[in-house]
Image (cartoon, rainbow, N blue to C red; front, side):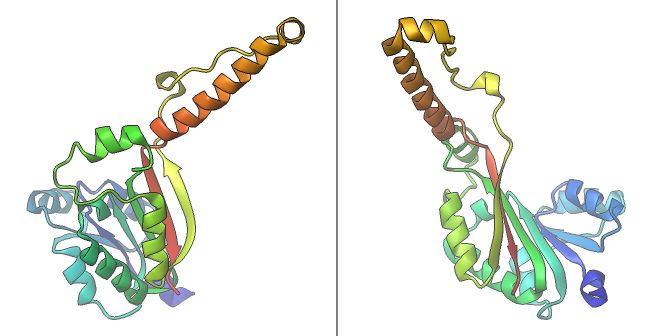
Length: 207
């Protein structure tokens, strides 16, 4: 409705303002908060409304249902579990009914993303498996709409499958062809476990 559309979208952890710029160019009412003063000043220098505030405290002080949506990119992995739960509970209260709440974080179900991306940053608190994060969002009173996997590794960087033989070769070497199929199934599963998408995004609606 018109009232909901007039409400702003809040970004927690606005950083350099890339998303704020996209939202503003799309004509959406939006603002952000960030703990890094230098990032806030940078955003202000390009005309963005990014405030030097703690996201949890800012949310706590907002009237209920005063946001049309909320997004946090690469933020939740920096929060202790009790703070994360509080953030989710606040989202369920502060975002208008049917407004979207979006969290993007590292896909810790991917071994390479976990070892190369997650553990490289000492400020990360705890790995959030997609199933765990979905559960936490669900029990907070938000309705999970979708879980999307992002930033796939290039196919050339993953384990390569054995080329499948043509029909004439398969007839002459059925055992070899069967072995190739087993190897390729196992390779596909290993690629999923080791080279899974680097990030995932949970999209939920306030109820």
